[in-house]
Amino acid sequence: MAKTKPGKKDLDSYTIKSTNKVVKVGDCVLMRPAESGKPPYVARVEKIEADHRNNVRVRVRWYYRPEESIGGRRQFHGAKELFLSDHYDVQSAHTIEGKCIVHSFKNYTKLENVGAEDYFCRFEYKAATGAFTPDRIAVYCKCEMPYNPDDLMVQCEGCKDWFHPSCMGVTIEQAKKLDHFLCSDCESENDAERSMNGFPASPSSEPKAEPKRRKR
Image (cartoon, rainbow, N blue to C red; front, side, top):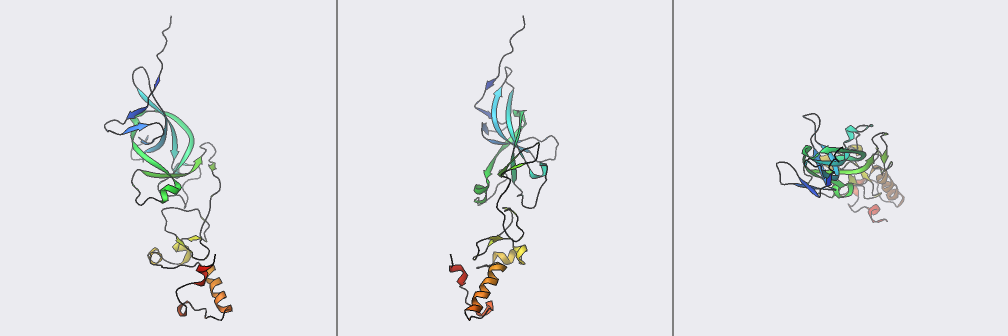
């Protein structure tokens, strides 16, 4: 008569080898890549279990880096951006190298300092088809690109849209020194309003307080 194979048991946590870091279900972890020299894989732990020999395995949901997706990395993708995929896997817990934090996009943009273990995610990704959710997000600037938190942008005091300094013909250093900024469209409207009201259109002869700013 065949013996019944001992079952697996669920664990509440796992301590990463050679560290005191404890991993629990729902935590995000860095996992050893298949090739040396490559950045670690990033995954969210969905389940931790041990077999009858106490070998611990984790069920994970993978995050993809933009360059690992079908479309590849694009201009608006941040250096620390990840996509939460529908790709699940079971791995040995020994391949976990450390823990990390995958922030929401909104929370990531509020960080004063971005650490090595900080990442962000704003898309879910279907690994088989390359489809993203959401499939549309807000775009900014004249270039009509989504926001990349790694790039400096300045806000127009007229239309309240955000612009890349390079798209407006100024350097990053110049943009950082700006006390007030109007995009070219709002600047043109402002000049037209001044001319109609009998004021000179030259910015050099106008006071710094812009009438456009006070409009709602």
